[in-house]
Amino acid sequence: MNLFKEIFRDITTLGGFVFTSLLCLTLLVVEQYGLFFKTVVGLVLILLICIIIRLLYYKDRPRKQPHHNLIERIDASSFPSMHTARAFFLPIIFWHITPQVSFKIVLILLTITVTYSRIYLQKHDWIDVSAGAILGTIVGIGIIYF
Image 1 (spheres, rainbow, N blue to C red):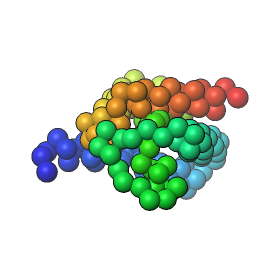
Image 2 (cartoon, rainbow, N blue to C red):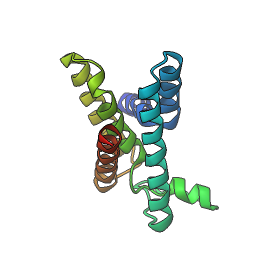
Image 3 (spheres, one colour):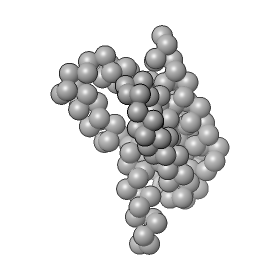
Image 4 (cartoon, rainbow, N blue to C red):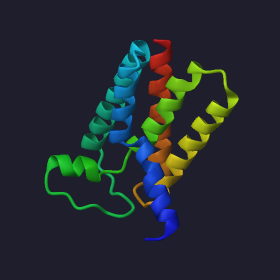
């Protein structure tokens, strides 16, 4: 496996379910209940919206993934990118917790890198990640302002 593939494989986990679950657990442990609630609600909304879209509209991944049942079919569908949706959602939610510009730059760079990793690893194409970015942004703004 080449070095770039390994690096992007590791970076893409920052938009994954395990990372976001651990992040939520961390917020709970450090007693950030408001932020925890907003984060969980947003992540659940993203998951539900993506599942509904993938049930109604199936789109093969750039590197096709075989599927034999409904759950595998949902996972094999690439539209929209859930990783990208979560990668855009999290910076929106966490943007206001610190005024430090360096923290905000890191959030933006991580979002861009996670998004690009999905294309580089041939899990999604530009349409998939664009839809995920829009979904994550809308959910993030919705959670903050409603």
